[in-house]
Image (tube, rainbow, N blue to C red; front, side):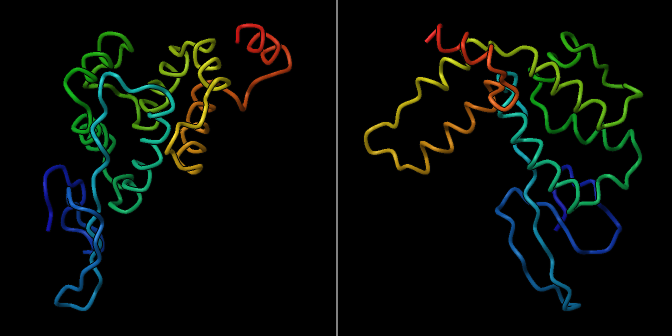
Length: 171
């Protein structure tokens, strides 16, 4: 079943999109069909760490639906459907990417990623990471995942010794 925004039409019936969870069902030709859930919409409030996670989901979607085999303009148009109007306005007016851009989808994603990365408040992100405590009732796994997300937002994996000293002074 093909639903809104499915960039794969009239190709081998391996993947179809659905807002439901990814289910595998048998079609009449005995070829398994995978219902591929579209990535969540990108909202104006997305931060760098959330965008990195969203991109991982999008890359899986892109592979399963063969979006990368489509024309550049179709790929870009489909990407715009995954953005809220507020995020689109930010992309157009703050990041200066026009809806009719001649950039590839990968180039657009890179511009957005770099913009969000540069927009981070590293001092605040690092403070939040270093002071993150496990909450009562929170499982270790939940705490660990939230700490890893904070580490990504804080640029932990790129920190140098000087950055650590500054962070520890601020905390």
